[in-house]
Image 1 (cartoon, rainbow, N blue to C red):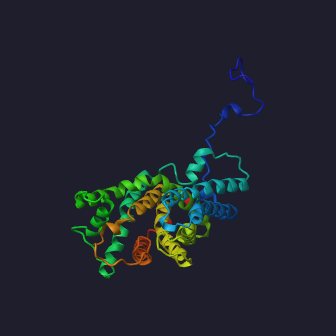
Image 2 (cartoon, rainbow, N blue to C red):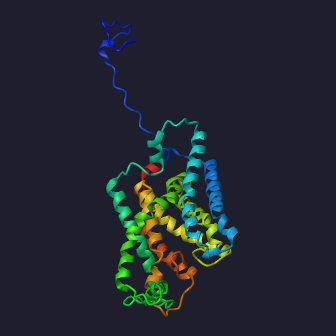
Image 3 (tube, helix red, strand yellow):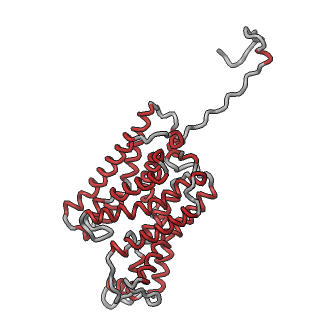
Length: 347
């Protein structure tokens, strides 16, 4: 039938002329995270198998070469490993949507919303918490170092930076004058927030999985179970590197358990940013800032200082975990985990 009518239209329905057709409103794009009433266990299982399987596959050359933490491929492969949760997220989404019997009706907009990537609403809160995460996560590591110093576990040189100066001198050819050490320290500190942004693409590879998909998927269990379980799995996912001595210098199950603890506590903080804003981006930048600040200890320690074990005083060690737990307690006391403070789009 043509859209253009050439004559009057006779209706067979009484009173039709008095009842003009109302415009049909556009159907909103459904939000899968808000629709969930049950945990999609099949999709969670696929996410777990794919993320861990790919992590071990990426780390396999490190194990085969047997060089451990001295392997020159370590940094490259650890960076590539950060992208594996994003691949697992794609697999989980495919399984979840197939279970719902969907044929892609949500499209790109629905997927971006489901993973907390877009839209950035509320914009002010999302940007503000992102900026706060970039500042707060390095400060937590710095506070951990302060506690280390107060406990007498290490000595810090905040004037001459003698430990860092010795590191720089050891890397220069003999007879080469070292640049002003204070200038180098300032540059390193300034690079932390910049590093948070530079690290963001790789941190996104992890966060789109842990806080973008897995945390909302587990949300029907309750806020705290979802936060703690997703954080524990995040820690366990690091096993291929932790068992080589990464982070703690431990090559047994103790290192894995310590990493699970650290990721559970840090995961609560990063997960709070996701629940508070509905966006994954504050967690991305917070994760990037935490990684960028991991070298603060060697920058500030004195040249003749004792070296405490990483499992105790490192950026993921027990002391920093305690500092992060105190911040979690403060947020809880301030009512930041109340249901009315969390984003409704996540359930």
